[in-house]
Image (cartoon, rainbow, N blue to C red; front, side):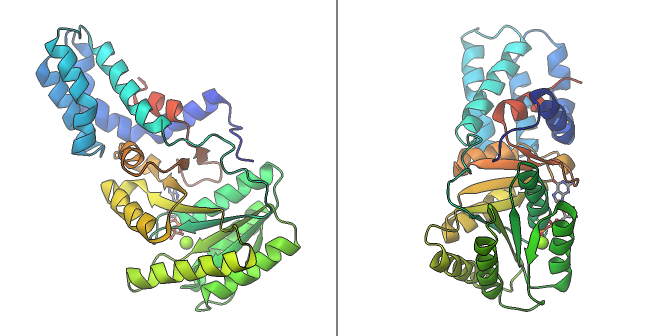
Amino acid sequence: MFTNDTPRQGLLGRFVAGLARTRQGLAGQIGRLFGANVPSAEDLEALEEALIAADFGPALAQQLMTPLHQRLSRRDLSNLDQVEAALKRGILDILSGVAPPPSTMDHQTRPQVLLFLGINGSGKTTTIGKLASRLITEGGRVVLAGADTFRAAAIEQLGLWGQRVGADVICHQAGADPSAVVFDAVQAACSRGASHLLIDTAGRLHTKRNLMEELKKIQRVVSRQMPDAPHERIMVLDATSGLNALVQARHFHEAVGLTGLILTKLDGTAKGGVVVAIADQLKLPITFVGLGEGVDDLQPFVPETFTDALFARS
Ligand SMILES: Nc1nc2c(ncn2[C@@H]2O[C@H](COP(=O)(O)OP(=O)(O)O)[C@@H](O)[C@H]2O)c(=O)[nH]1
Ligand SMILES: [Mg+2]
C-alpha cells in the first residue's frame, strides 16, 4: 500500500503545477537575480526576504542563507546557479529527514486504523476521500467513520465520498457521540475484513480542551477494541494558513502525539515554504500533500520532487 504509483515525471508535473503560486512568489522576488552573473550580498538578502515571504520563517530562511553568505565572503560563489544549487541542497536535507519511505504506513495488522485530526476546513474529509480512492485502487477495502458528528452536512459529505470511491461509511445522526460512531466503525471494519479504517473527526468544538478530550476518548475506544490502534494519528493542515499551521500542529502534537502530517491546498498558496518550516520544526513524517480539489490531487510527498518543483523554471 501507499506505493508511489504516479510515474516520476507525472508526479513532478503535478508538483510543478501545484506549487505555481509559491514558485511565482519566490521567482517574483528573485527573478532578477538569476539574470545576473556574480551574486552580491544584497542579492542574497533579497533571496532571504523571498524565502520569508514564502513562509519558510525568518529563522529557517537565515539558517539556509548563512552558508551562502559565508561562501560569498570566501569568494567561493561565482554564479547564481551555485546559489540555487546550495539552497536546494539545504532544503532537501531538511525534507529528507521527514519523508516516510513508501512502506511506512504498510503495517501487517488489518485493519489499519488511521485517525484524521485538524481544525475545521483544513481538508480532512476531502483528504480522507482522496486517500480512500487511492487505497481502493491499490486493492484495499476501506471503511470510513463519520466521527465528525457536529453538522449533518459533514456526515453527508463523507457519505458522498464513500459512494464516489467505493468505501463503506459508518455514521450516526448529527449530534451523536463520536466515540459511539468509532466503536461501530471498528466493529464493522474488523468483521468486513477491511484493510483500512479512516476516521474523520470534528475540528470545531467550542474549546480546544473539549476537542482534545474528545480525541483522547476516541483513541481510548479504538484501543480498547484493537490494542495497537489507532496505528496513525495524522494531522491535516491547510497550507494556505502558512506558519499558523505550524502552531496548530504543535498544539495537536502535544495533546495527542501525531504520527504524520498531510498538507493540503498547496495549489492555492504562495506560502509553500511552510512545508519546509514544518518539517524543520516538528520532524514529523509528511505523508501526502494536497495539490487540488480533485480525487487524484492527493500525492505522496517526495522531497526531491517538491524541491525540484519549487525551483522549476517555466
Ligand atoms: N484547492 C484545494 N482545495 C482543497 C484541498 N483539500 C481540500 N480542499 C478544499 O477545502 C475545503 C474544505 O475541505 P474539507 O475536507 O471539507 O475540510 P474539513 O473541515 O477539514 O473536513 C473544501 O472545499 C475542499 O474541496 C486541496 O489540496 N486543494
Ligand atoms: Mg470535514
